[in-house]
Image (cartoon, rainbow, N blue to C red):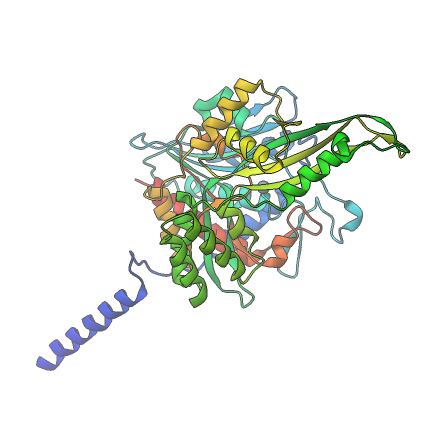
Length: 493
Ligand SMILES: [Zn+2]
């Protein structure tokens, strides 16, 4: 008897130790992905790839009609919104909950970038499965995500899971550089896509060479793209009789661009980047952890600059992402000057694309460019189809959008279920250095969490928008389990 009690106590102690050793946060049973459900996602993805939705023209009508045939028999409310161009079709499926909570939305773009057909070894619009991979345009970006999201919603419907909130699947059109994207949809049909929070594309589940996943990036904010035109003017005439250097447009532009090329905007630690670096600490190398602590503890601008430079220099990769998260960036992307070899042109132009951190305004960036080039005779203007005031208002609104909060049921479920699949992984909230179409929700105060919902290695990432794009079957199986469990946790009664 005594012995039995002792053994029970000992077992309890062992169990408690195991519990605490696992993690400081809520710990849940590890799960293995369901083979059957994973295969259903693979089968759906192959069908989605077979629709050529290359943008332009971004014709997603047939794909939307196909999704309708998949969702309608399951009792989902289905809707197709075709944009005024007659091609961009947004598909929306809604499972009804009891209305006690606001909807959760899963958004995935159904259009893809075009292919250079001759450079593919597999047919890009067939959904070929070979050696453990599904090949095809969109396999990773983002028909794979669409298949994972769609299957999560379909499975809830198939199982007749009682729901406390509506679950909405949106297969978006015109994400890849069209005008009838989610911004247009939100403006014209907000009621169809309004939600408490949403998933969209964004951060990477980073798979290491040995196949393990240690870092899962979830994007909660993004930088803002703003483009500026520089125009230098000067005397024009015969190239055999050059004017003094500062009277020629090309020369003025060249020295302005040389100043910009040598300039790196100052280090700024915005809340979204701060959260990112903090979350990285547990999986950082010793050196990186020292650098991060130094950055987080910086008391003034000069300490920030020193720490920021060190973090980039010590980065085991190329340091470009760290650099982009710490600064507004500028890149000279276009130069346009001259009409003939023997003519000195009267003007010369260049385009500078900047990526602004939240909080930086376009007026501040114009002032910075002007200060750096230090030439009052060069015009600096924002490139936009809006009026100057509209543009100012638009960018002022964009730069004020806060990062999506981490204390929502959706973020917590994403994190919890990720750790059940990838036990050693850390979920890292981050800012996207480029842009997505999540702004449509974030600007309306709806949190959006961006993910490519499957493990990705360097090889898969290098094929994104490139040739022989593919995604591994195993990654699809894992993503299927992750997203289904997440959405069910958030939506079930
Ligand atoms: Zn994409």
